Image (cartoon, rainbow, N blue to C red; front, top):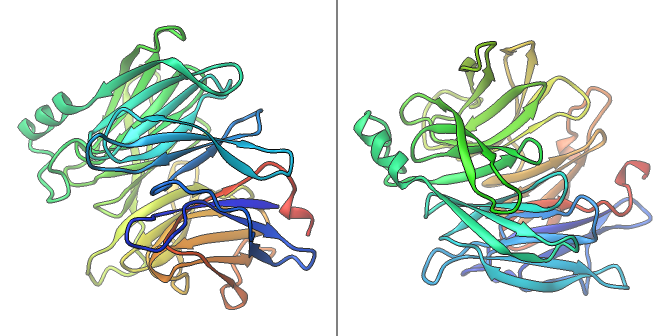
Length: 357
């Protein structure tokens, strides 16, 4: 199995995107010649059918962020192919339509989503449209939301495709989760279909989707919300639960959420309390969580399969790799620590299979 690791490069000594390879002994090591320079490549995504990877370049100052596409060469390594302007400040999340023809680029500081067309070969097309949440933020403030110190503007943290037309947007600045639909594959114009308004100060960040349920992690309130659409096509908030293992206080900000591929459970990373938590669910009910705290400082993104769990511990400059036992629980004591400066994203590549080791 091979992984690409996204990092922050500003004032960290990072060389950009690193490659992890699995050896014959099952250990992961940093490839000597697999580093790709890109400034602040904090989020990556693989094309569903082509040997391509897209990466943001998270830049917050003028002229703005960028998005790059990497192409696999004859040796199996990835190299830069194209780089274009992302359309805003601090691009922080990407999502590809299942057909591989449209790329969503979320901008934290601009509070916007770029809808970027792709050619049949996966290169960037000529059409890019923009969804701005500036007016939504003004309305949120008028309604009493957006008052948290981290909510000084609209902050789109993610936009996630459900199918080739529909996608869900989480706006940390407006406390909204919104359902959009592409009106046309040619013009890439989008229309808003639905909006879930979370409690003021929640700060929705990312979403995991399963069986017509949207599991949203809220960064500022450190909660998980279960959202759905009722029979009358109205938005519903079915349940909510704190994702903090310790309610004693202190700053903590939830980061990533993922569905367990083997059990009915969610996983969430918390920065501040520096914990990874597993939240089982039964139907629409979220059950008491279980936490692991020996996961490194500032655990950001993580990836889990039926046998493996990898965690990007940003402030410890390590990626932790550990096995999962028969109950799906991580063996933290035997974790392998792989040194990489400021890691924040883990992308497993489709080539190879870590499950066979």
